[in-house]
Length: 97
Image (cartoon, rainbow, N blue to C red; front, side, top):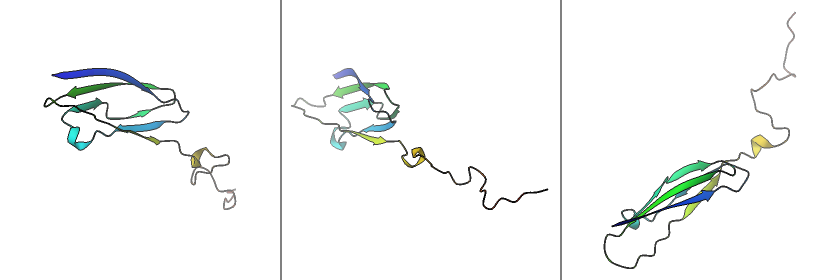
């Protein structure tokens, strides 16, 4: 018999995050989380579908950590950032008449 539950997670930060559920390998047949991995934009809410199927009668205590990675590129958002090749280098520019 399986139990199903829906819940939401929200990115309350101002930067995009990539997240991933890490169900311990020994419980991968009992626990399912969907989506397992996704990207959350700032203030975005994601609905998660969890399924638990007990394979035998016993007491289960399972932790499935959620890991998140910041997708914000600090270098590109600094004041004065220069992207090489994005414009003309004025020092080496030659005027054609």
